[in-house]
Image 1 (spheres, one colour):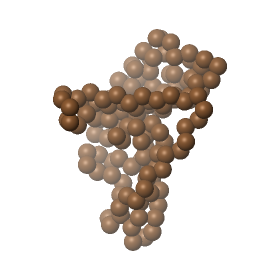
Image 2 (spheres, rainbow, N blue to C red):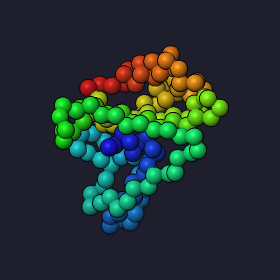
Image 3 (cartoon, rainbow, N blue to C red):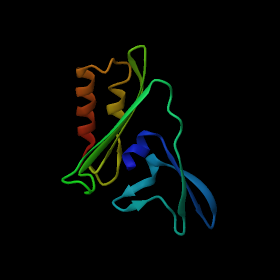
Image 4 (tube, helix red, strand yellow):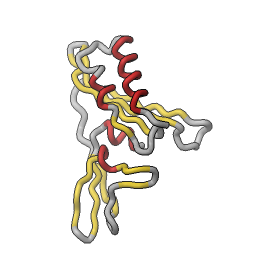
Length: 132
């Protein structure tokens, strides 16, 4: 679930001969079956910040049958206050060589009431960065 980890702003703690370091999930994935782990490093823990009050989330994946890897997936984390979107994170997997953080798609939602127009624009921007 790389998209979920990216949308949640998770970080991965890795350990190797040189010691420990934290890698943001948004920087971890380098390509198909490739990560930013150095030679001899292993993943030792995952840290996920507590979401803000008023948050909501969704993770959806498309697959051919139960048990298959996702053909495509999206994770969204939103924070609402006073009927408006205060923050948004959208991440996509299996639509490019690496998981994608759809920053511009998220920007399309901030400050809106998440109406159909804003959602359609966010979807358009997310689709624009996909390179399946």
